[in-house]
Amino acid sequence: MTRMTFDQVVDFIVDGLQAPEHARRATRDNVRKRVRYGLGDGSLPRLDLGTTDVHRNELILWSRKKWPGKFTDTPVKFTEHCQD
Image (cartoon, rainbow, N blue to C red; front, side, top):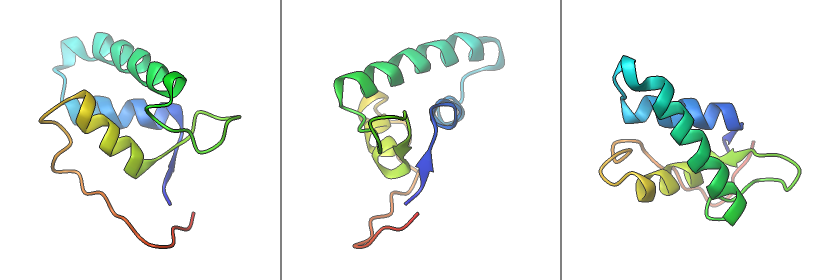
C-alpha cells in the first residue's frame, strides 16, 4: 500500500493538473481546499482517523472524478493483499 500525506497528495494533484507556472499558486490553494473537503465528507477516505494520510489508489480514483479527463494515464494497482 502506498501511503500519501496531505502535502504529497496536493503535490501529486497539482503536478497531474499541469497548471501553468503563473497559475500554480492559485491551483495549489484550490487543490488544498478540495482535498480537505474530500477528507471531511469522506469521499476521499483517510487511512487513519488521526491523520490526513490516504492510499494512493484511492486518491487516483477520487481525482479522476474531481477532474474528469485528468489522471487517466496514472495506473491504479489493485492487489489482493496490500502491504505498506
